[in-house]
Image 1 (cartoon, rainbow, N blue to C red):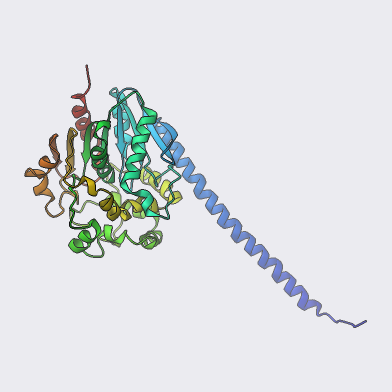
Image 2 (image 1 turned 135 degrees about the horizontal axis):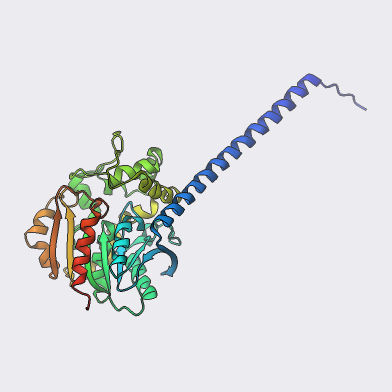
Length: 369
């Protein structure tokens, strides 16, 4: 038998090293798991605090192949609230309470790709084209309020765009519309939207930067979810929004609390931004899909509200279109345009009391006594 000689000190050192290294790896894995668990638990607590504070009903409804998270309160005629980017149902928290207290059933879903709504594959932006998004909402209304042939609709930002298309596609479903921030935009058959934005504002304009899948998500990950949301939600420059963001600190206004930002962040940390960004990535596809509606008019009663500091209101040609008859021509039942002074883009949160009253006063004219 061949004999082997061992250096016991050598073996002991290496065994010790192996044990310590294994312990280190275990601690690192445990720390990562603990950190992930901590974040998830913290986000759950934030959600519970919000739900307890507002005492809204949360439910899930299977619509159009997705599981849609819906928040609602009240009884009566349905008011469907459609949020924008980077928002959630939560953007309508003030309006949900107010309308419920005044005899309406306020309904605010997380749109496909947002918040607690699940089931829409995010890898393919075409899953977020306007026909599917409007289809989600039509089916939602059919399921939750089959006895109501028409519902009231309120939209903001992308929610306003969706609401305009809802009125074009299915005017029979909309009793009246209050839309905010984004005016109706007639389809231009000679130019796709993204190339128009690029030609007007350049490559760093936010909508142009949003186009390449994964690119802006990587940038946002470096900045941090909470800071990204803070930068968007506090933006009050009437000029175009360019990316990346500057290094200035996020200073929250009186109408947006740390708790509000935490709630938004708790959801976006879970889902990421891709779902919402896919709406922008479907702009050119929407242009192709809606060729049949070129020249179509919105034949639903409308009240339009915008802040004078909103970047959408200050875009080239928009003030003239809104104030000098262009929008009235395309939206013949436009009842009134309300321009709020010294108000930015997220007006339903910034000036909730004024917005609540403007919505309620308009819809009251369509309710039987």
